[in-house]
Image (cartoon, rainbow, N blue to C red; front, side, top):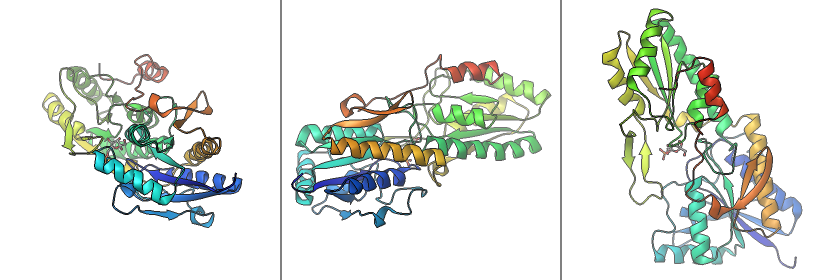
Length: 355
Ligand code: F6P
């Protein structure tokens, strides 16, 4: 290689435990290979959208000591939309040229993958994608980094909330993140011994949920419900907290647990309470599993860059790291299949899935 390959890294969408581990693995792999310069782009695509690009050099020391740290040292944005209009796209293109970037490694969820794909299509900017989300819902990725950490956080919260539910003989609803996929509520519900697990994939029957709570009122005297924020009653709608205008992902869910409490309370003798876990699920240090997984994703992204395999996103299928065209992932979601083994097992061990 005659001149150094210049690689930009950005993190887009919600923060997620393990992002720093990916940044570190991409940077170290490229520097270790040699003939590479790495730049960290600030705040996702937003760092490329202003009249001046916002980026700084990443070297070996700059990414040392961040493997285990939550959040992202680069900052992120889930409202920046480089595809907003032609002027914004032209600015992004000019900034990438000014920085001299050969390729951008975009670490993000399905929204960021759609943006990376759109930008590449419209401007010819080369991108490599790394999937991230605590929701675990990206196509071709059986496990996304950050998910294991979030499951541990929710399971811990369920355990703590069980103490209160048990002591006060209450029905405790715990609302998790996860948007339109129920992976987080399902795995955390299983790990945290929830009695009822409600997912976006299975519309719940209020009377069935109430019946389980009433049976438990007679025996255990408390009930723990773990509910994904996207879950909704049969014939009802998801609970939307806000619409963020101009965002590539404008719908913000939240409050499904309060809606369920309001419906359930009149049907029960026990007091019903709701806890919305919110952003604690995205924070904290990644688990060792997530640190290793994130490092594998980052290392593969560097390999794709070095091989000139642009337009690809790193994947994990049957335990193996690989890649698929980003186009195959943009605007798709991986939901819990209704015949998934975890659902079968949950039913068989007596967990109510809302129907
Ligand atoms: O996609 C990750 C996620 O945490 C979802 O589970 C959640 O619905 C959304 O992001 C929340 O985004 P924000 O931080 O913008 O409220």
